[in-house]
Length: 262
Image 1 (tube, rainbow, N blue to C red):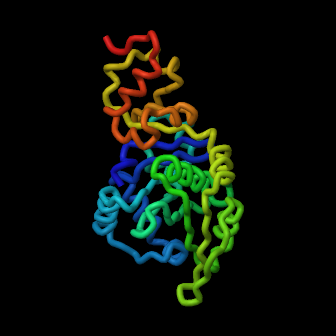
Image 2 (cartoon, rainbow, N blue to C red; image 1 turned 30 degrees about the vertical axis):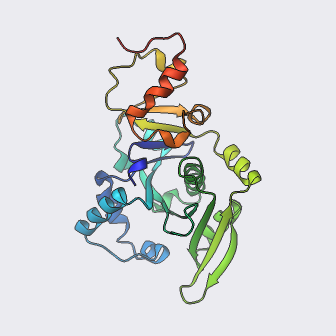
């Protein structure tokens, strides 16, 4: 999905970044695991096929994918590559043509040492928030293998309820409908999230203005990082910002008497 191609979601335990070609070799190594193939109902791919899959996920409008990074490792090592901090991925599939407000969510924490530490939970919460505030989703489903009890329990803790079970596919379907109370609960659970957009040309910005706006510059790659409260105030809503050029109205709105640029 191109909508999230310049987006970063920064939490306490995880950082979500778009799935790019630089992530493919590590991802390919993960998916050689028979355990992960079984848990994700995936078939092994060649490296070339994996690159083709990454390109299709980037282009397809019905797939939204983020790579999950270990936030502690990523922030503690200036200059660390995203690949060295990868722990998994989280996905939304918008494939129900009759209901565009429904998204199927998947999460995988591929690194065994990172499981059971809450990274998957925060990754799912961040994706639910993104799906709700940016993609306009109001219903989420998760299809999980019956043997994957830790994943089932995690989604149940996030207010998902089982709505179906398939003996043929050996999986259960859990659903979350975002009522007004669930909407408020999700906002509370994700209020610490920061939303960033990759910004390759900072020349129009006076650096001292960024903190004044409540915005900070994350280290390489260059991201403007907005607190959640500011993210919600974007002109036209959060979905109005998909490229760096569309940040202009927000800056003009928030700058008051401060003049940006030379």
